[in-house]
Image (cartoon, rainbow, N blue to C red; front, side):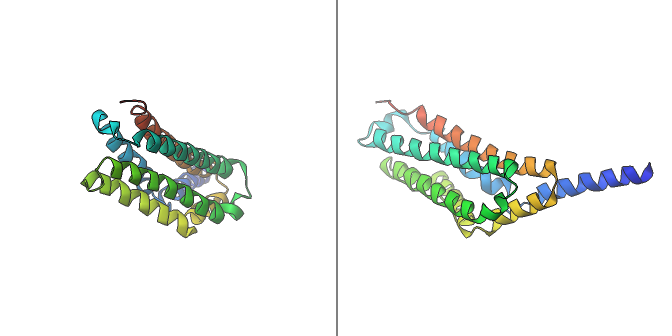
Length: 185
């Protein structure tokens, strides 16, 4: 009985350590979208009446929708495809490209609104750029996926997938915050 309790405790600790020892932290993964949402919610409605903003918002919405789908697909692949470890590096690079497209569209929006020099906007840009570079390098995402899949722990696999699904939700939160401004004149 005592051995079973010790074994159970070790397994719980190993699962917890696998979640704490992520190569890509929650801060790196989620903060870009949370920060961008905060800036989007603070956008002045009258400032969006500038020429070209509706088109810029529309393109940004398309890129955010595509990124959300890519993040959801990554989360599903982590759980549903044991062979995903072989594709993780390539998927990381593809995600970096999608994050880069969103970054360009956000930069264009902030430029059009003459907000690019604001500290909160610079922080958003730096945060998104950091995530893009991390994903472009491929190794940290691949490490997270391989270590988690290699652990064989269903809890760890589900936790990793949940992190990436949460990132998709944060991207959608940003998309919804920006959608409030679409169509305003």
